[in-house]
Amino acid sequence: MSPRPSRLPCIDALKAVSSQLIVLHHLAFYGPMSDAAYQLAPGLVDWLYDYARIAVQVFLVISGFLAARSLAPDGRLETRQHPLSMLWRRYQKLVVPFAAAILLSMAGAAVARHWMTHDSIPASPTLGQFLAHLTLLHDILDVDALSAGVWYVAIDLQLFALLLGTLWAARTVSGGRAPAGVAVSVGLVALAAVASLFWFNRDAAWDIWAVYFFGAYGMGTLAYWASAPGRPLLPLGLIAAVALAALMLDFRLRIAVALGTALLLALARRGEWLERWPRARVVGYFGRISYSVFLVHFPVCLMVNALVSHFAPARPVLNALGMAAAWALSNVAGALFYRFVESAQPLAALRALLAGRRDAAGDSGPGSASRPTM
Image: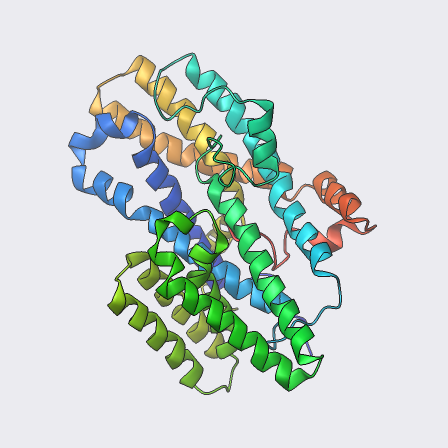
């Protein structure tokens, strides 16, 4: 059997588009430039402010889809490694570049404070605040965020832990028997997803915990299992029916987007074009650097906001050009961060050292399909 490809062009394309929408949402949400430019295109700014953030649902579904592909491609946890060891490796992959990005955000905020006073600038950080971010406990401890979107990194780890724990429990309960293990795994993941869709996701008080987001993540996981070539369409139909029932009970656009993404990925895999389309190298590249763009765009946008608001306050055209410049520079910074931080071999060696492994590149090279999905 030929090895699975490390890159999936369809997923890269979804990540590329979604990451750009998130950057644009934060440009509309944070800083004075969008306020000054609002009169030029109020409809566009309002749309980016209200709706572009829903692109994060695409990443949640992709994360669940790729986690199933990595951990349990046949519906049952394959590896015999201890779950805590696997969770530790996931933590390293997320947090090593995340820590570097937080330092950049702290520096960017310090620079921005010299040029403007605005609510979007984080206050000077404390050591406890920084450590809360490194441990991904900032939301749980109710600590002010040092960058935009940092909640997602913590939730990604929680979701991975929840799925991993569920799969491990299913294997333990089934006693290692393959058919029973698959049935129990699918059943438990489906039960957790249903609980999220019909209960937890309807109550914002749960939004610092994985259970709030597991409806989207679980749909991605179930979509992978239901989309094996040659498998009947009935499992996909059941996923769609349950999600539609949840939407009829309480319509949430974020769940509708998650359902659409899960079905798209499933049909792409069934049709065997998940690994072949689109072929555009540029799109694939932006998909690869999407996590880096997500990590570093906030300090870039913050400093451009500070510069433009200082030299050209209340000038709509210049502020709109500033937004465009911040968007472009965020991608440039993301490409540099990907090249020199996220995929840099010294950091791969550090991750391997922390994991007690000798081969740095084998676990976390830039082509790994289990890399963070942002």
